[in-house]
Length: 206
Ligand code: GRF
Image (cartoon, rainbow, N blue to C red):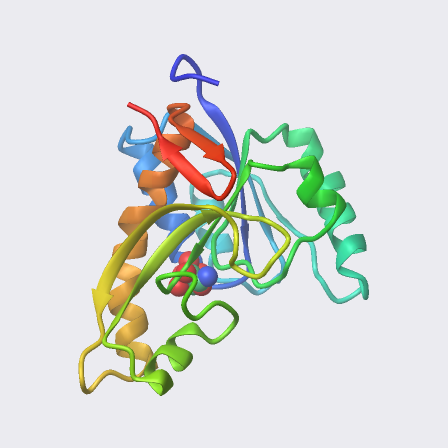
C-alpha cells in the first residue's frame, strides 16, 4: 500500500462520533489519502450516524444484542464489512471487543483510540480511573487492536495534564481535543504506508 491510491476505511462507532467527524474533516481537507467507505454503528441511536449521513457515507447498524458470543458478533461484523473491502478499520468510540476470527481476518488493519496513556488505565471507564488514582498526567493513545483490552501495539501517544479540579467531563474534553488531532494523524501515516508493526513496536517510517 502506498500513497498512490486512496485507502478504503471502515469506521465503527457506538455513540457521539466526534472522532469520526474529525477523520471525515481531515479527509475533506486533504490530510489523509483515503476515504471512509462505510460507517457501522452498534446502536441505531448513535448521534455519530448523522456525521456519516451528512457526508453521504453509507451508514449501517449492527447491534450487539442478538449476539451472545463476541466471536459471533465479530463474524457478523466481518461479513457486513467484507463487501466494502477495507484496507483499514478504525474503532472510534466503538464499545465492543472484536475477538477471534475478526482479528485474524483484519490483523494489523484495525486501529483504536483510547483516552489515556496506555498501558495505564485501559478499559471502559478510563477518566474515572485516572481521577480516582490521582494521576497528574493522562493523554490519549492510538494503537493497533489485538486480542486484549486496549493492549495492541502503540502507534501514537500524547500527554494531557490532569488539573486539580477536574471531573470526568472536563478531563474527557481536554483529552478529546487532542484525540481529534492524533487519530487522523495516525490514519494519515497508515495511508502513506509508513507504519510497520515489529512485534510490540510500531515503527514510523520516513
Ligand atoms: C473517545 O474519548 C475515545 O477515545 C473513546 O470513546 C470516546 C468516543 O468519543 N474510546 P466519540 O464517539 O468519538 O465522540
